Image (cartoon, rainbow, N blue to C red; front, side):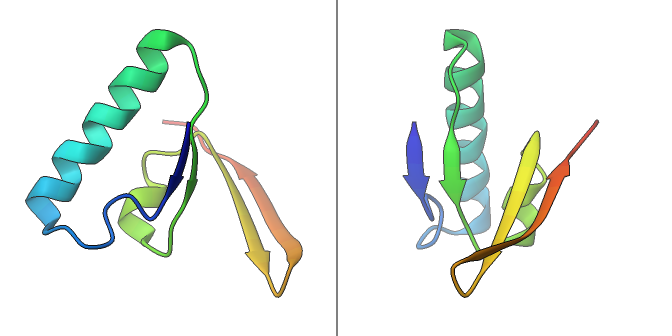
Length: 65
């Protein structure tokens, strides 16, 4: 699943519901979601984070819970 700023125009409560739903659906289906975001809060859901600046990969991190 590709998601480009899926919560960008939502209030924080609705955005949280949307993110939880997307996370549940992709994990249940055993699929991967690629999400583009500027939100530090949204990054908290990620298993892996890639940071791109001016078209170049500047950081890659695997996150553990």
